[in-house]
Length: 490
Image (cartoon, rainbow, N blue to C red; front, side, top):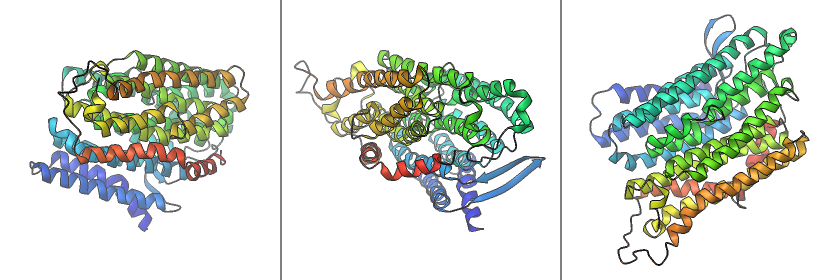
Protein backbone atom coordinates (compact mmCIF):
# COMPACT_ATOMS: atom_id res chain seq x y z
CA UNK A 1 0.00 0.00 0.00
CA UNK A 2 2.77 2.44 0.94
CA UNK A 3 4.59 1.72 -2.29
CA UNK A 4 1.47 2.63 -4.29
CA UNK A 5 1.23 5.94 -2.43
CA UNK A 6 4.85 6.72 -3.29
CA UNK A 7 4.19 5.81 -6.92
CA UNK A 8 1.10 8.02 -7.15
CA UNK A 9 3.01 10.86 -5.46
CA UNK A 10 5.96 10.56 -7.84
CA UNK A 11 3.68 10.82 -10.87
CA UNK A 12 0.68 12.94 -9.89
CA UNK A 13 2.08 15.25 -7.17
CA UNK A 14 4.33 17.18 -9.63
CA UNK A 15 1.55 17.23 -12.23
CA UNK A 16 -0.90 18.68 -9.69
CA UNK A 17 1.63 21.10 -8.18
CA UNK A 18 2.80 22.25 -11.61
CA UNK A 19 -0.79 22.94 -12.60
CA UNK A 20 -1.26 24.79 -9.31
CA UNK A 21 1.75 27.00 -9.98
CA UNK A 22 0.38 27.78 -13.45
CA UNK A 23 -3.15 28.67 -12.40
CA UNK A 24 -2.90 29.92 -8.80
CA UNK A 25 -2.91 33.74 -8.94
CA UNK A 26 -1.10 34.36 -5.64
CA UNK A 27 2.45 33.41 -6.69
CA UNK A 28 3.58 36.84 -7.81
CA UNK A 29 6.63 37.23 -5.55
CA UNK A 30 9.65 35.50 -7.02
CA UNK A 31 10.86 33.97 -3.75
CA UNK A 32 7.43 32.49 -3.07
CA UNK A 33 7.25 31.11 -6.62
CA UNK A 34 10.67 29.48 -6.32
CA UNK A 35 9.88 28.14 -2.85
CA UNK A 36 6.62 26.51 -3.90
CA UNK A 37 8.11 25.14 -7.13
CA UNK A 38 11.13 23.59 -5.46
CA UNK A 39 9.21 22.25 -2.48
CA UNK A 40 6.90 20.50 -4.96
CA UNK A 41 9.84 19.22 -6.98
CA UNK A 42 11.81 17.95 -3.97
CA UNK A 43 8.79 16.14 -2.49
CA UNK A 44 8.11 14.57 -5.89
CA UNK A 45 11.73 13.51 -6.24
CA UNK A 46 11.79 11.98 -2.76
CA UNK A 47 8.68 10.00 -3.72
CA UNK A 48 10.38 8.89 -6.96
CA UNK A 49 13.49 7.79 -5.05
CA UNK A 50 11.30 5.77 -2.67
CA UNK A 51 9.74 4.05 -5.69
CA UNK A 52 13.15 3.41 -7.24
CA UNK A 53 14.38 1.85 -3.99
CA UNK A 54 11.25 -0.30 -3.61
CA UNK A 55 10.60 -3.78 -4.97
CA UNK A 56 7.64 -5.15 -6.90
CA UNK A 57 5.80 -1.83 -7.13
CA UNK A 58 2.81 -1.98 -9.48
CA UNK A 59 -0.58 -0.32 -9.70
CA UNK A 60 -3.63 -0.98 -11.89
CA UNK A 61 -5.08 2.52 -11.94
CA UNK A 62 -7.85 2.64 -14.53
CA UNK A 63 -9.42 0.27 -17.05
CA UNK A 64 -11.01 1.52 -20.27
CA UNK A 65 -12.57 -1.81 -21.15
CA UNK A 66 -11.11 -4.97 -22.65
CA UNK A 67 -7.33 -5.04 -22.42
CA UNK A 68 -6.84 -1.25 -22.30
CA UNK A 69 -5.81 0.07 -18.90
CA UNK A 70 -3.60 2.62 -17.20
CA UNK A 71 -1.09 0.38 -15.47
CA UNK A 72 2.14 1.21 -13.68
CA UNK A 73 4.87 -1.34 -13.03
CA UNK A 74 8.33 -0.40 -11.76
CA UNK A 75 11.04 -2.54 -13.35
CA UNK A 76 14.87 -2.23 -13.36
CA UNK A 77 14.99 -0.39 -16.70
CA UNK A 78 12.44 2.16 -15.51
CA UNK A 79 14.47 2.68 -12.34
CA UNK A 80 17.58 3.57 -14.36
CA UNK A 81 15.75 6.15 -16.47
CA UNK A 82 13.92 7.59 -13.45
CA UNK A 83 17.15 7.96 -11.44
CA UNK A 84 18.94 9.72 -14.30
CA UNK A 85 16.00 12.06 -14.90
CA UNK A 86 15.75 12.91 -11.19
CA UNK A 87 19.42 13.87 -10.86
CA UNK A 88 19.64 15.93 -14.05
CA UNK A 89 16.20 17.54 -13.53
CA UNK A 90 17.28 18.75 -10.08
CA UNK A 91 20.58 20.16 -11.41
CA UNK A 92 18.88 22.03 -14.26
CA UNK A 93 16.20 23.27 -11.86
CA UNK A 94 18.78 24.75 -9.48
CA UNK A 95 20.51 26.38 -12.47
CA UNK A 96 17.15 27.84 -13.55
CA UNK A 97 16.79 29.82 -10.31
CA UNK A 98 19.42 32.32 -11.43
CA UNK A 99 19.22 31.90 -15.20
CA UNK A 100 15.50 32.65 -15.47
CA UNK A 101 15.99 36.11 -13.96
CA UNK A 102 16.72 37.41 -17.45
CA UNK A 103 13.70 35.67 -18.99
CA UNK A 104 10.06 36.69 -18.83
CA UNK A 105 7.11 34.62 -17.55
CA UNK A 106 8.99 32.70 -14.85
CA UNK A 107 5.70 31.47 -13.37
CA UNK A 108 4.81 29.68 -16.59
CA UNK A 109 8.31 28.23 -16.92
CA UNK A 110 8.50 26.78 -13.40
CA UNK A 111 4.92 25.53 -13.55
CA UNK A 112 5.59 23.47 -16.65
CA UNK A 113 9.05 22.49 -15.40
CA UNK A 114 7.53 20.85 -12.30
CA UNK A 115 4.64 19.34 -14.28
CA UNK A 116 6.84 17.70 -16.94
CA UNK A 117 8.85 15.91 -14.24
CA UNK A 118 5.71 14.02 -13.21
CA UNK A 119 4.95 13.11 -16.83
CA UNK A 120 8.47 11.72 -17.28
CA UNK A 121 8.13 9.65 -14.10
CA UNK A 122 4.88 8.24 -15.50
CA UNK A 123 6.74 7.22 -18.66
CA UNK A 124 9.52 5.54 -16.68
CA UNK A 125 7.05 3.62 -14.52
CA UNK A 126 4.54 2.72 -17.26
CA UNK A 127 3.63 -0.95 -17.22
CA UNK A 128 2.12 -1.24 -20.69
CA UNK A 129 2.13 0.39 -24.11
CA UNK A 130 -1.22 2.15 -23.67
CA UNK A 131 -0.06 3.96 -20.52
CA UNK A 132 3.25 4.82 -22.15
CA UNK A 133 1.55 6.28 -25.23
CA UNK A 134 -0.89 8.33 -23.19
CA UNK A 135 1.84 10.03 -21.17
CA UNK A 136 4.11 10.23 -24.23
CA UNK A 137 1.52 12.46 -25.90
CA UNK A 138 1.15 14.42 -22.69
CA UNK A 139 4.93 14.96 -22.66
CA UNK A 140 4.78 16.49 -26.14
CA UNK A 141 2.07 18.95 -25.11
CA UNK A 142 3.66 19.92 -21.79
CA UNK A 143 7.19 20.41 -23.13
CA UNK A 144 5.89 22.61 -25.96
CA UNK A 145 5.59 25.74 -23.73
CA UNK A 146 9.23 25.31 -22.64
CA UNK A 147 10.31 25.52 -26.29
CA UNK A 148 8.00 28.47 -27.08
CA UNK A 149 8.82 30.23 -23.79
CA UNK A 150 10.07 33.60 -25.05
CA UNK A 151 7.18 33.84 -27.57
CA UNK A 152 9.38 35.24 -30.33
CA UNK A 153 8.46 34.40 -33.90
CA UNK A 154 11.41 32.01 -34.07
CA UNK A 155 10.31 30.26 -30.87
CA UNK A 156 6.68 29.95 -32.00
CA UNK A 157 7.70 28.47 -35.36
CA UNK A 158 10.14 26.09 -33.65
CA UNK A 159 7.37 24.99 -31.28
CA UNK A 160 4.95 24.36 -34.12
CA UNK A 161 7.61 22.37 -35.97
CA UNK A 162 8.22 20.30 -32.84
CA UNK A 163 4.48 19.71 -32.46
CA UNK A 164 4.02 18.71 -36.11
CA UNK A 165 6.92 16.25 -36.09
CA UNK A 166 5.91 14.82 -32.72
CA UNK A 167 2.32 14.24 -33.76
CA UNK A 168 3.42 12.56 -37.00
CA UNK A 169 5.59 10.19 -34.97
CA UNK A 170 2.85 9.61 -32.43
CA UNK A 171 0.36 8.60 -35.13
CA UNK A 172 2.83 6.01 -36.44
CA UNK A 173 3.10 4.61 -32.93
CA UNK A 174 -0.68 4.66 -32.48
CA UNK A 175 -1.14 2.64 -35.68
CA UNK A 176 1.30 0.09 -34.28
CA UNK A 177 -0.60 -0.09 -30.99
CA UNK A 178 -3.82 -0.87 -32.87
CA UNK A 179 -2.09 -3.76 -34.62
CA UNK A 180 -0.31 -5.09 -31.54
CA UNK A 181 -3.47 -4.89 -29.47
CA UNK A 182 -5.06 -7.24 -32.00
CA UNK A 183 -2.22 -9.72 -32.48
CA UNK A 184 0.17 -9.47 -29.50
CA UNK A 185 -0.38 -11.67 -26.50
CA UNK A 186 -0.43 -8.58 -24.28
CA UNK A 187 0.58 -4.92 -24.39
CA UNK A 188 2.19 -5.24 -20.95
CA UNK A 189 5.96 -4.79 -20.80
CA UNK A 190 7.49 -8.26 -20.34
CA UNK A 191 11.29 -8.70 -20.66
CA UNK A 192 12.01 -10.48 -23.93
CA UNK A 193 8.55 -9.72 -25.33
CA UNK A 194 5.24 -11.54 -25.04
CA UNK A 195 5.32 -13.21 -28.45
CA UNK A 196 3.23 -12.56 -31.54
CA UNK A 197 1.80 -15.97 -32.33
CA UNK A 198 -1.46 -14.35 -33.47
CA UNK A 199 0.37 -12.51 -36.24
CA UNK A 200 1.93 -15.57 -37.91
CA UNK A 201 -0.20 -15.05 -41.02
CA UNK A 202 0.62 -11.34 -41.17
CA UNK A 203 4.42 -11.31 -40.80
CA UNK A 204 4.93 -8.85 -43.66
CA UNK A 205 2.49 -6.38 -42.13
CA UNK A 206 3.99 -6.99 -38.69
CA UNK A 207 7.44 -5.91 -39.90
CA UNK A 208 5.97 -2.77 -41.45
CA UNK A 209 4.19 -1.99 -38.19
CA UNK A 210 7.33 -2.47 -36.08
CA UNK A 211 9.35 -0.29 -38.46
CA UNK A 212 6.70 2.46 -38.28
CA UNK A 213 6.86 2.32 -34.49
CA UNK A 214 10.65 2.63 -34.58
CA UNK A 215 10.29 5.65 -36.87
CA UNK A 216 7.53 7.08 -34.70
CA UNK A 217 9.51 6.94 -31.47
CA UNK A 218 12.62 7.87 -33.48
CA UNK A 219 11.07 11.29 -34.11
CA UNK A 220 11.53 12.26 -30.47
CA UNK A 221 15.00 10.69 -30.52
CA UNK A 222 16.00 12.84 -33.51
CA UNK A 223 16.65 9.93 -35.90
CA UNK A 224 16.97 10.70 -39.62
CA UNK A 225 14.79 11.50 -41.54
CA UNK A 226 12.59 12.92 -38.71
CA UNK A 227 15.33 14.88 -36.95
CA UNK A 228 14.84 18.43 -38.23
CA UNK A 229 12.73 19.66 -35.30
CA UNK A 230 15.56 19.16 -32.82
CA UNK A 231 18.16 21.71 -34.02
CA UNK A 232 15.32 24.18 -34.55
CA UNK A 233 13.64 23.77 -31.16
CA UNK A 234 16.49 23.37 -28.68
CA UNK A 235 18.37 26.62 -29.41
CA UNK A 236 15.31 28.87 -28.88
CA UNK A 237 14.36 27.38 -25.50
CA UNK A 238 15.89 28.75 -22.28
CA UNK A 239 19.24 27.01 -21.64
CA UNK A 240 18.07 24.85 -18.69
CA UNK A 241 15.06 23.74 -20.75
CA UNK A 242 17.43 22.93 -23.64
CA UNK A 243 19.53 20.88 -21.22
CA UNK A 244 16.64 18.67 -20.12
CA UNK A 245 15.15 18.49 -23.62
CA UNK A 246 18.46 17.33 -25.08
CA UNK A 247 19.60 15.22 -22.14
CA UNK A 248 16.32 13.64 -21.06
CA UNK A 249 13.19 14.26 -23.13
CA UNK A 250 14.69 12.84 -26.32
CA UNK A 251 15.55 9.68 -24.33
CA UNK A 252 11.83 8.96 -23.99
CA UNK A 253 11.88 8.14 -27.70
CA UNK A 254 14.71 5.72 -26.98
CA UNK A 255 12.81 4.20 -24.07
CA UNK A 256 9.73 3.79 -26.29
CA UNK A 257 11.75 1.84 -28.87
CA UNK A 258 13.29 -0.36 -26.16
CA UNK A 259 9.84 -1.09 -24.74
CA UNK A 260 8.39 -2.07 -28.13
CA UNK A 261 11.31 -4.17 -29.41
CA UNK A 262 12.53 -5.79 -26.20
CA UNK A 263 9.39 -5.82 -24.04
CA UNK A 264 6.45 -6.32 -26.44
CA UNK A 265 7.35 -7.87 -29.79
CA UNK A 266 10.68 -9.44 -28.81
CA UNK A 267 13.96 -8.79 -30.65
CA UNK A 268 13.81 -12.05 -32.64
CA UNK A 269 10.90 -10.66 -34.68
CA UNK A 270 13.21 -8.25 -36.52
CA UNK A 271 16.58 -10.02 -36.27
CA UNK A 272 18.00 -10.54 -39.76
CA UNK A 273 15.06 -8.82 -41.48
CA UNK A 274 14.91 -5.70 -43.64
CA UNK A 275 13.69 -3.81 -40.56
CA UNK A 276 16.97 -4.35 -38.73
CA UNK A 277 18.96 -3.42 -41.86
CA UNK A 278 16.95 -0.25 -42.44
CA UNK A 279 17.17 0.72 -38.77
CA UNK A 280 20.94 0.24 -38.68
CA UNK A 281 21.28 2.27 -41.90
CA UNK A 282 19.23 5.18 -40.56
CA UNK A 283 21.15 5.27 -37.27
CA UNK A 284 24.57 5.40 -38.96
CA UNK A 285 23.39 8.08 -41.38
CA UNK A 286 22.18 10.10 -38.39
CA UNK A 287 25.42 9.64 -36.44
CA UNK A 288 27.56 10.90 -39.32
CA UNK A 289 25.16 13.60 -40.53
CA UNK A 290 24.60 15.03 -37.04
CA UNK A 291 28.35 15.27 -36.40
CA UNK A 292 28.99 16.94 -39.76
CA UNK A 293 26.21 19.50 -39.26
CA UNK A 294 27.46 20.23 -35.74
CA UNK A 295 30.99 20.75 -37.08
CA UNK A 296 29.73 23.30 -39.61
CA UNK A 297 27.38 25.15 -37.22
CA UNK A 298 28.51 28.48 -35.69
CA UNK A 299 25.70 29.11 -33.17
CA UNK A 300 26.73 27.32 -29.98
CA UNK A 301 23.36 25.97 -28.79
CA UNK A 302 22.45 24.87 -32.30
CA UNK A 303 25.82 23.10 -32.56
CA UNK A 304 25.02 21.23 -29.36
CA UNK A 305 21.56 20.36 -30.71
CA UNK A 306 23.06 18.81 -33.85
CA UNK A 307 25.44 16.96 -31.56
CA UNK A 308 22.43 15.48 -29.76
CA UNK A 309 21.04 14.28 -33.09
CA UNK A 310 24.27 12.35 -33.60
CA UNK A 311 24.74 11.08 -30.05
CA UNK A 312 21.22 9.70 -29.58
CA UNK A 313 21.72 7.61 -32.71
CA UNK A 314 24.79 6.08 -31.05
CA UNK A 315 22.27 4.66 -28.59
CA UNK A 316 19.86 3.57 -31.33
CA UNK A 317 22.68 1.93 -33.29
CA UNK A 318 23.58 -0.22 -30.29
CA UNK A 319 19.95 -1.22 -29.83
CA UNK A 320 19.55 -2.05 -33.53
CA UNK A 321 22.47 -4.51 -33.38
CA UNK A 322 20.37 -6.70 -31.04
CA UNK A 323 23.61 -7.69 -29.34
CA UNK A 324 24.03 -7.81 -25.52
CA UNK A 325 27.36 -5.96 -25.46
CA UNK A 326 26.13 -3.25 -27.83
CA UNK A 327 22.93 -2.86 -25.84
CA UNK A 328 24.98 -2.42 -22.66
CA UNK A 329 26.85 0.37 -24.48
CA UNK A 330 23.54 1.93 -25.50
CA UNK A 331 22.10 1.97 -22.00
CA UNK A 332 25.39 3.27 -20.59
CA UNK A 333 25.31 6.05 -23.17
CA UNK A 334 21.76 6.94 -22.08
CA UNK A 335 23.11 7.69 -18.61
CA UNK A 336 26.40 9.28 -19.65
CA UNK A 337 24.96 11.46 -22.40
CA UNK A 338 22.29 12.82 -20.04
CA UNK A 339 24.98 14.16 -17.68
CA UNK A 340 27.37 15.29 -20.42
CA UNK A 341 24.95 17.07 -22.72
CA UNK A 342 23.10 18.74 -19.84
CA UNK A 343 26.45 20.06 -18.60
CA UNK A 344 27.30 21.38 -22.08
CA UNK A 345 23.94 23.15 -22.52
CA UNK A 346 24.11 24.64 -19.03
CA UNK A 347 27.67 25.85 -19.78
CA UNK A 348 26.34 27.53 -22.93
CA UNK A 349 23.56 29.03 -20.82
CA UNK A 350 26.06 30.43 -18.30
CA UNK A 351 28.03 32.02 -21.15
CA UNK A 352 24.88 33.56 -22.66
CA UNK A 353 23.70 34.77 -19.24
CA UNK A 354 27.00 36.49 -18.33
CA UNK A 355 28.20 37.71 -21.73
CA UNK A 356 25.25 37.59 -24.16
CA UNK A 357 27.45 35.75 -26.68
CA UNK A 358 25.76 32.98 -28.65
CA UNK A 359 28.19 32.27 -31.51
CA UNK A 360 31.29 30.11 -31.30
CA UNK A 361 33.45 32.69 -33.09
CA UNK A 362 32.68 35.21 -30.33
CA UNK A 363 34.13 33.04 -27.55
CA UNK A 364 37.85 33.79 -27.95
CA UNK A 365 39.25 34.28 -24.45
CA UNK A 366 36.10 33.07 -22.70
CA UNK A 367 38.23 30.72 -20.59
CA UNK A 368 40.04 33.71 -19.13
CA UNK A 369 36.74 35.35 -18.18
CA UNK A 370 34.89 32.22 -16.96
CA UNK A 371 37.57 29.62 -16.12
CA UNK A 372 35.45 27.34 -13.89
CA UNK A 373 32.58 27.25 -16.40
CA UNK A 374 34.87 26.48 -19.32
CA UNK A 375 36.73 23.78 -17.37
CA UNK A 376 33.36 22.11 -16.69
CA UNK A 377 32.55 22.45 -20.40
CA UNK A 378 35.95 20.95 -21.27
CA UNK A 379 35.61 17.89 -19.04
CA UNK A 380 32.12 17.23 -20.43
CA UNK A 381 33.47 17.67 -23.98
CA UNK A 382 36.27 15.17 -23.38
CA UNK A 383 33.70 12.71 -22.07
CA UNK A 384 31.50 13.15 -25.15
CA UNK A 385 34.48 12.68 -27.49
CA UNK A 386 35.29 9.46 -25.65
CA UNK A 387 38.70 10.24 -24.15
CA UNK A 388 39.57 7.72 -21.39
CA UNK A 389 38.92 7.54 -18.52
CA UNK A 390 35.85 9.75 -19.04
CA UNK A 391 32.42 8.11 -19.25
CA UNK A 392 31.89 8.41 -23.02
CA UNK A 393 34.88 6.14 -23.64
CA UNK A 394 33.23 3.27 -21.75
CA UNK A 395 29.92 3.38 -23.62
CA UNK A 396 31.59 3.78 -27.03
CA UNK A 397 33.94 0.87 -26.26
CA UNK A 398 30.94 -1.37 -25.62
CA UNK A 399 29.18 -0.09 -28.75
CA UNK A 400 32.19 -0.74 -30.98
CA UNK A 401 32.88 -4.11 -29.38
CA UNK A 402 29.26 -5.17 -29.73
CA UNK A 403 29.23 -4.12 -33.36
CA UNK A 404 32.32 -6.18 -34.18
CA UNK A 405 30.93 -9.13 -32.22
CA UNK A 406 27.54 -9.01 -33.96
CA UNK A 407 28.89 -10.40 -37.23
CA UNK A 408 26.26 -8.53 -39.26
CA UNK A 409 27.60 -8.12 -42.82
CA UNK A 410 28.96 -4.62 -43.53
CA UNK A 411 27.52 -3.06 -40.35
CA UNK A 412 29.81 -5.02 -38.01
CA UNK A 413 32.83 -3.05 -39.31
CA UNK A 414 31.13 0.04 -40.76
CA UNK A 415 29.62 0.90 -37.37
CA UNK A 416 32.95 1.28 -35.51
CA UNK A 417 34.40 3.24 -38.46
CA UNK A 418 31.55 5.77 -38.40
CA UNK A 419 31.68 5.97 -34.59
CA UNK A 420 35.39 6.78 -34.82
CA UNK A 421 34.87 9.42 -37.52
CA UNK A 422 32.04 10.91 -35.46
CA UNK A 423 34.30 11.04 -32.38
CA UNK A 424 36.92 12.97 -34.36
CA UNK A 425 34.27 15.39 -35.61
CA UNK A 426 32.99 15.75 -32.02
CA UNK A 427 36.47 16.79 -30.94
CA UNK A 428 36.53 19.18 -33.90
CA UNK A 429 33.36 21.02 -32.92
CA UNK A 430 33.70 21.00 -29.11
CA UNK A 431 37.37 21.41 -28.20
CA UNK A 432 38.25 24.53 -30.29
CA UNK A 433 36.04 26.52 -27.89
CA UNK A 434 38.29 25.38 -25.04
CA UNK A 435 41.51 25.99 -26.98
CA UNK A 436 40.60 29.49 -28.10
CA UNK A 437 38.98 30.16 -24.73
CA UNK A 438 42.12 29.51 -22.70
CA UNK A 439 44.71 30.37 -25.41
CA UNK A 440 43.29 33.46 -27.14
CA UNK A 441 46.62 34.55 -28.66
CA UNK A 442 48.65 37.74 -28.61
CA UNK A 443 45.83 39.86 -30.05
CA UNK A 444 43.60 39.33 -27.02
CA UNK A 445 42.98 42.36 -24.80
CA UNK A 446 44.49 41.07 -21.57
CA UNK A 447 44.38 44.53 -20.01
CA UNK A 448 40.61 44.68 -20.33
CA UNK A 449 40.06 41.18 -18.89
CA UNK A 450 37.05 41.02 -16.58
CA UNK A 451 36.03 37.96 -14.59
CA UNK A 452 32.43 36.96 -15.37
CA UNK A 453 32.01 33.69 -13.48
CA UNK A 454 28.35 32.98 -12.66
CA UNK A 455 26.95 32.63 -9.13
CA UNK A 456 27.09 29.38 -7.15
CA UNK A 457 23.53 28.34 -8.04
CA UNK A 458 24.74 28.10 -11.64
CA UNK A 459 28.23 26.76 -10.94
CA UNK A 460 27.29 23.94 -8.55
CA UNK A 461 25.11 22.07 -11.10
CA UNK A 462 27.89 22.46 -13.67
CA UNK A 463 30.50 21.08 -11.27
CA UNK A 464 28.30 18.12 -10.26
CA UNK A 465 27.40 17.18 -13.86
CA UNK A 466 31.02 17.57 -15.04
CA UNK A 467 32.14 15.45 -12.07
CA UNK A 468 29.59 12.75 -12.94
CA UNK A 469 30.77 12.79 -16.57
CA UNK A 470 34.22 11.79 -15.35
CA UNK A 471 33.46 9.64 -12.29
CA UNK A 472 30.96 7.41 -14.09
CA UNK A 473 33.81 6.53 -16.47
CA UNK A 474 36.34 5.94 -13.70
CA UNK A 475 33.92 3.75 -11.70
CA UNK A 476 31.59 2.20 -14.28
CA UNK A 477 31.32 -1.32 -12.85
CA UNK A 478 28.28 -1.02 -10.54
CA UNK A 479 26.17 0.57 -13.29
CA UNK A 480 27.49 -1.82 -15.95
CA UNK A 481 26.69 -4.87 -13.81
CA UNK A 482 23.18 -3.59 -13.10
CA UNK A 483 22.51 -2.97 -16.80
CA UNK A 484 23.90 -6.40 -17.77
CA UNK A 485 21.42 -8.01 -15.37
CA UNK A 486 18.61 -6.18 -17.20
CA UNK A 487 19.90 -7.26 -20.61
CA UNK A 488 20.18 -10.92 -19.61
CA UNK A 489 16.37 -11.07 -19.41
CA UNK A 490 15.91 -10.24 -23.11
